[in-house]
Each structure stands twice: as structure tokens, then as C-alpha cells.
Image (tube, one colour):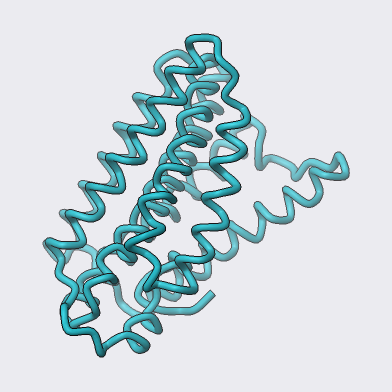
Length: 245
């Protein structure tokens, strides 16, 4: 993981250093528009698989297929930013298919959880955007290094958990609804949320430094990755809390 303007591995300063020669330049408004488009595509796909699930149709193939396609396209976009305008909409579609099925499964078990998770995610997004724009939170170098390190630690723990799970071994507290488990989820939610600040800084810096136009799609992609992660972690946290009742 490169240490740059964002803890999100898809967003870093090295990208700007490689791509200054394009005639058209990245703008904040353009990035906002691309982010809106990707979120509309994602939500549309999510609603489609959500509806299929509650109509009794099989959605597992869509969920698994969407997740695999999203991983592959996410890696391609991360290493080939110029492909972002073409691949990010497809990525959003695939991610939405997976997210809709996942949300429906959580909703079946805990009524109302998806709406609460979505509202909390949007609330955190708006709060951190306001805090960033008003300079209440600044993406200093130490701040960025801390968030990058914490984010890397979270994904390392998830990777270890996944590998151990293949052998029937469970990482203590990570997935259970104990107070410690809930505390761990709260910490992960905070780390995911702080990545938004770094994403805002990355997009602002790209616009200021005259990054090429296609970087608007790349910035939208990175921001969407963080929002999806935050939403999923909200679902996990709320499900732990609800399951204690």
C-alpha cells in the first residue's frame, strides 16, 4: 500500500505524478458528477438483486459473480487509471449486485437494519465532508500515515481471518456479538470513516494539481470503494448489536 493522499489503496499521490500531460483537467465538480453516476448505477443494481431476493428468486450467483467481477475490475482500475471511465460503471454494476443480495440477507434476519446502516453511512459522509471543508479535520501527513497504517492492519486481520476460516479456525471476537466484538466493529467503522477524509483530500489535490480528466472517474471509484466498505461495516456493527437483544 502506497502512502499518499488517501488510505484507500486505489487513491494515492503517485497517480497524479504519472498523469499530468492530458489536455483536459480534473475538477471537483466533475468528480462529484461521476460519483453520483456510479452511485446511481450501484443502487440500481442493488435494488434489482434486493427485489429478486424478496421475490424468492435465487440471487447467490449474482452476488458471487458480482463480487468476483468487482474484485477483478477494481484491481485493473487501480493499476490502470486510464481505464476508469470505461470500467468504473461496470464495477459499480457488479458491486451493486453483490451489495443488494448481501443487504437483503441482513434485512431478512434483522428487519430495518439496511435503512439504518444506509442512513448512518450517509450521515457520517456528510459530517466528515463538512468537517473537512471547515478545516475541523485536516489531512496532515501524520493523520494520513495513521489512517493508512490502521487501514492496512484491518485488511490484514480480515485476510488472516479468511485464511484461517478455510481451516475451520475462527479469530476470537472479530465476528461475535460480545462487547469486545462490538468494540472491534466500532473501531473498524471509525477507521473506514476516516478514509473519507483522505479521499476528499485526494480529490481536492488532484483538481488543484491539474490531473487529467479521466481521474474524475478514478476519484469517484476510490470514494465509492470507501463508502461501500463503511456501509458493510455499519451492517456488521448493527447486526452484532441487534443480535444481543
